[in-house]
Length: 258
Length: 260
Image (cartoon, rainbow over all chains, first blue to last red):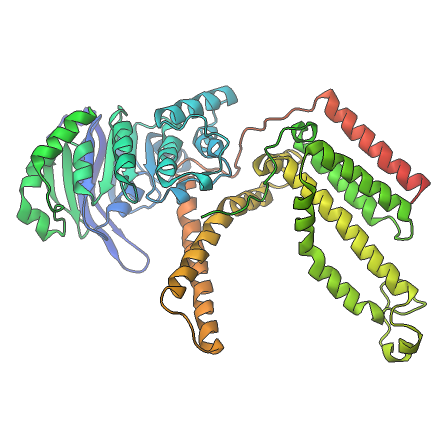
């Protein structure tokens, strides 16, 4: 399908069972090219977040995962390397932001990478600038608005300069303006992006390709606008489109973002 | 939702605020030890201790009312001491108790020993609490923790305090939301039923915090966590810090030598 050298992520027959017996992933295979924006859409409980946690070795399922050709194994040097390449942004920014200041959170990753202080400071400044949160270094994350928290959470990953950015439910709990602002920021990132969500119109703004994950399996893979036309497929996997949705309007909005 | 900061006045601008937190930690600790080992009969020494605090308070521009309000929280403890003071025996030393209180009743409820114990507790807790409030209100909490870290306090302790500071508000918010949701459904009834509801709120909170802890840990791991929350420490020991430290030590030692 693609030239293997270009692959950012290669997953083959990945399955994962939680300790309580829940089968979250049942043989997922997926290839993502470098620089691609891929939406992983699926209903609640489909295994989307589990898949994300497998991508940088936080959870270890059965199967093969390669990041830029490097196989994930459980040696700590390998995991360090993988986690440098794959940045995960969790759904709830309160989980992602655990330091007493914004600076601390954004500096956490690069400091763990062993960078020197000037470099860490430069990266923090850069990352906060990219998400339009410059000047908030000394704020306590608790006192930010939800949209601001979400953007800082993304900055905590950008400061590590990963090649792949994987974001869980970027649009959840955000008002319209914050969603648009976030979409602009995400679209301006020239990285391989994985957007995991059940907010289909929003994912379509950000991604050209989509896969549908349901019940631990990938049931569709293709161009986003093609998938949007398959109403029956979407309905079957509990993924209806919002009332009043029109692809024409979506295409216009997407043009505006670029 | 709004909560008051733990370190509400820590972002003011003053000489004290600009000092290296390490200096403030060491002087506060020294001050506390000196207050503790001063006998309660040396009232002049306590007056001078209080004056020192007052000077620092005025330099650091923290409202006095704020400190007095914070002091209210130790009153329950003092109250307990006052209640049990009559049991302190007349001719023993502080800390020995006399259960024959009824025999003493004729000669007055409190004897000289119990008055000394009460004075001891009230004066020392008052001075100590003010010292601690001054410490926590003159440096941002994160920098204070780093100061402790630089003074070789184990990272596990400072990390725990850091997480506490970060998540206490989140947890308070969660409790408030749960209580609101409970009240919105016409919460009333016998106390036995009420206590059951309170119990399940507490259990719920515990589970949520536990799960949040796991998620936070995952978020830390995915950014390469390896044991320490290292942040930028803004302060350096300048000559003014050393001077402050020395003056502080000299004054307190002199008080101890000549008055205490």
